Length: 270
Image (cartoon, rainbow, N blue to C red):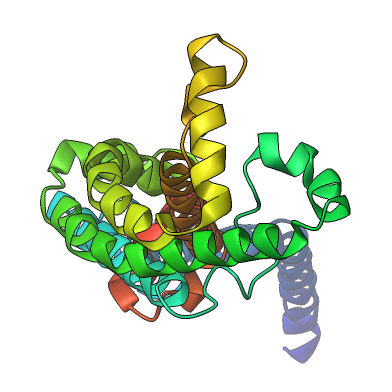
C-alpha cells in the first residue's frame, strides 16, 4: 500500500515545486508591478494635496498684481512724504548748503571765472561774503518748499502712482519737480533776494550780468544773483530727494514701513 502511494506523493511534490518555480519567475514581477502601481497612486494623491496647499506667505515677495492700487498709492505717498520731509530738514538749516561741499552753491559761473582776479585786486572778502550770503539765502528759502511738496503728494492719482512705481530710479522725484518747480521758484526768489540785496558784489554783478544777458553774452538764468541762487537751490533740493528715492528703491528694507517695503520689493522681484 505504501509503495503504491509513494509515487503519487513524489509526483505531487514535483508538481508543487514546478508551481513554486513558476510563481518565483512570474509572480514576483507581478507583485512588484502591483506595488509600484499602488505607490504611484499614492504619489499622485500626495502631489494633488500639495498642489492645493496654500504657499507660505513669506516664501516670495508679493507681486504688484497682489497689491491693490490703493496700497501702491498709499506706499508711494509715504515714500514721497518721507523723502520730501527729510530733504527739507537736511537743507533748511544753518550750513545745510554752505556746510556741505557737495551741495554748497558756488559763485555764478561768470564770477567764478574771474574769482582769482577779484582776489588779486583785493575783492576776495566780497567774493566770500557773496558765497556765504547765497547759501544762507538758500537755507532760508528751503523750508518754504515743504508745504508745496506735501500738497503735491496728496494730489497723486492712481495713474500717477502706477507710472511712478514702474518708472526709473527717480521717477517720484521727477513727479515732484514737474508739480512744484514753477511754484517754488516764485516762493524762493523773494527770500533769496532779501538775503543778497545788500551785498555790494551782488549788486555789481546784477548790473553787468543783465547787460551781458541782453546781448546774448550770458545765460539769462545767470542774469541776476537771486535768479541763479533760486535755481541752484531747487536743483539741490530735488537732487537730495532723488538720492533718497534711489536708495529706497535699491534697498526697500530701509523703508521703515511694511507696506513701503512690500511695494518696492514687488518691483525689484519683477
